[in-house]
Image (cartoon, rainbow, N blue to C red; front, side, top):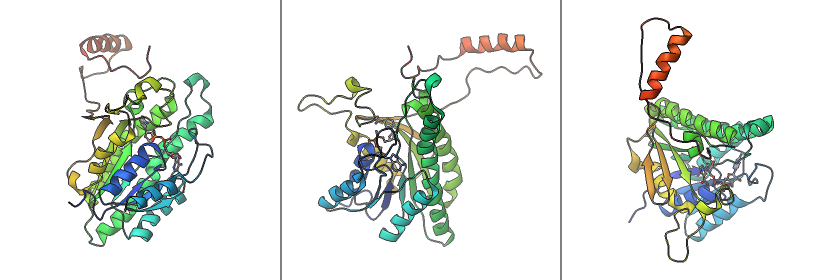
Length: 303
Ligand SMILES: NC(=O)c1ccc[n+]([C@@H]2O[C@H](COP(=O)([O-])OP(=O)(O)OC[C@H]3O[C@@H](n4cnc5c(N)ncnc54)[C@H](O)[C@@H]3O)[C@@H](O)[C@H]2O)c1
């Protein structure tokens, strides 16, 4: 039986370990040719053990698949451009971009250094924008040349971006930014054949295995290992395949055996007096509206 991604060329950023590695292997298992990007940094983004991308390429090859490693930094325009070039030069085309690379610098806001703010915003938010822009340029040129484009982008947000997470102000802001970027990219890139969606995953990786050790723990022998990163990849593969035609601008939570469509901001109780309020009147109106509104879902880690 032909795989879901037979003949497609797929880039996965940060695919040397964790969720990205699981996605790369899952795409290859469905017949895709994969560009495995990873800069090989530590959990905090500082230089770390290198070569994780080459290891995943070897794993894919050992299973009979095709893959190539790319070791560039996706948060630089040169790295993003050479990533798309690696797909086109090696496999002749690009069909799917999975933006996944990133790292953490957790601190309470009062103690958060400017450098740690910048580094996390850079790797997640700019690290989504730059590969997206390079890929978009290639797809738009294909469409202009009259070749059919059925391209897919899967962005990686987080529960921290959806609800906020205590001690992760930089990360939550970057991951919320990715949701806005996804909504705009879906609209702008749709006309030339590109669908753009986002996921908010949860899985046991080096990013979570210590902080959320209990939630992430593997079960005893034989039980369903709900927090294995491989559980998130099937949805990512489908979103990255031709088969997801018509789905764009959406956000999914994916964890264990559960897939949830996230329904975003929409207007709640409202009042319009047709003229300017005084501050006291605005406060009175806001209090009434809040009394009629649903309470927000709790921020992760809120006491
Ligand atoms: N693990 C979870 O539960 C969880 C939850 C929500 C969101 N996420 C998101 O999923 C994605 C993958 O996370 P993970 O848990 O697999 O983490 P991970 O640390 O296992 O993997 C991330 C990979 O990205 C690479 N990377 C970092 N900066 C890079 C750069 N500039 N260029 C290229 N590669 C770079 C790292 O070397 C690493 O291999 C991240 O965006 C993360 O924020 C993870």
